[in-house]
Image (cartoon, rainbow, N blue to C red; front, side, top):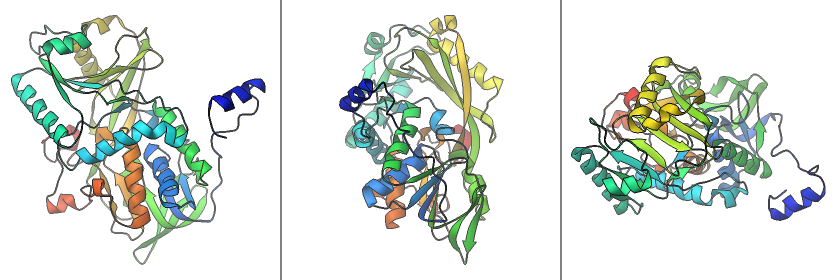
Length: 416
């Protein structure tokens, strides 16, 4: 069933009793051409683009929980392409362009809201760094505007411009950035993939990889063995666990990233703002809640929950940037498991095991990369060659020295 004003009107006349489930809860078959492990945004997008771009439909996405239970439903929903380095800029710009046409492409309302992303700067040195990044973006064909203090004040007058330690001097604005409803992304890709014949298999945890003579032949799961010609890993913070089943040690650490939402408020902030004097970012959801986050927890963990010191740090940054938030009540907070790479950039590549492909190392950037990640991963799986915008995301770059260190902090996964 195609969603449209006409289908809505027809269902209205029927008392809305004719709607069908958005996707089938499929049982796993004995064998597939491609098996995608991970039913998050990246795994579902990969399956969708395998079918829509490459005509490969004998594909299953297997998820240990339910669709949307992982990081795709545990993030702060921000999308942007305001990167500095040439290894990252074209990839994230492709992703932003795919976001712009996503709802028409998959016939699903993902609530794409290009409300702008504003990065604040608080010193002359930070202004110069933002100017450099903005110039690099423009040279790559990406929109960027460097704003002064009064231009920022006109956009967000309620911020603390007179902070004695970190006065707001201006900001770098990407108008095409914004936010997207994270749950709708998972549901939309799942529905679109299902309509093209992809099996979506939930509650199916991988317990082992079947490898013979250096080649992947399938996986062992809690629902039995499944054979496959090719297997793709898209499991975010659990990447190191799955890779260990193939005898690989990845250049990745897993950390918890917490996110927060306030009580619902009337429209208050119509853009995404990031604090340049601390790691803090905030926007407002369609339900009225203020959605914000900060740094990852400082220790390795696979748990989807965080700790109190990070909560305190995030709240301190919130109050420093916007003192009025002190009157707002918190509604809830949650955690997602981040796959933090050694240089802060992702990996989309073959592995040493023939037929086994890896999509990992997304750090803070996983959600905004969802469409391009799936698009490029599908290209790699279908053609056994990297897509041109993801060619730099090689697994061996850490051995060859071709790292993509966007923040310039070195091999410190917890700092990226």
